[in-house]
Amino acid sequence: QKEVEQDPGPLSVPEGAIVSLNCTYSNSAFQYFMWYRQYSRKGPELLMYTYSSGNKEDGRFTAQVDKSSKYISLFIRDSQPSDSATYLCAMSSYSIQGAQKLVFGQGTRLTINP
Amino acid sequence: KAGVTQTPRYLIKTRGQQVTLSCSPISGHRSVSWYQQTPGQGLQFLFEYFSETQRNKGNFPGRFSGRQFSNSRSEMNVSTLELGDSALYLCASSRDSRNTEAFFGQGTRLTVV
Image 1: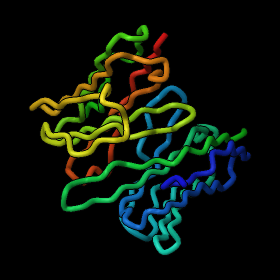
Image 2 (image 1 turned 120 degrees about the vertical axis):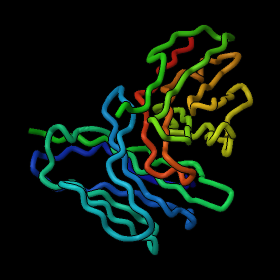
Image 3 (image 1 turned 180 degrees about the vertical axis):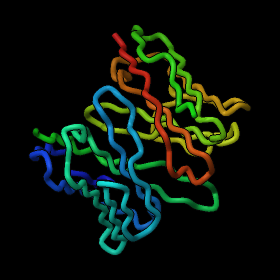
Image 4 (image 1 turned 45 degrees about the vertical axis):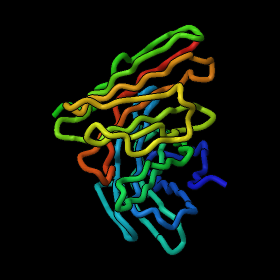
């Protein structure tokens, strides 16, 4: 079983829809949770970063972390064709020995149709 | 503020050769991590350097190595290239040792023929 599970999609929705992207994980030591957006042939771009459980909002994007369920979500409101990309969740833990590696989900390919 | 810069952007190498990839982190960032991205395996962690010390290493063979210089710039080297090493190699930098808020470069696309 992978440490981080993410539905690869593809996911196709009409412009203006609310998009929900999700990841589950098995390692309860994860403390830091991130969402990246990756356009074709580009490097991942950091969208949202949260520490521990809770919600964080940035414009049309909302990230939620539920550590009790080991479940994280990214919501995109009023989706635009420019949001079409692959979305990757990532998470890590931190110990006194230093930072741990980022563990990524497989990525969900999202298409917003005009 | 300049982002993470990776050079070269594209490379074509022959099996058995070796290759060196370069990464210049964001100014002020001391942590540099390397990842391999393939369609089948996704993003996989190679190694991470902080203040010239390798702190973490992923599950890759010894043919993959790296180093970090005093100015935080990093290089990774792959020796005795195999066809399966064809991938997008990504470098990420972060400000501190927590390695959170990691910012990625555009990557180096390596093709081994």
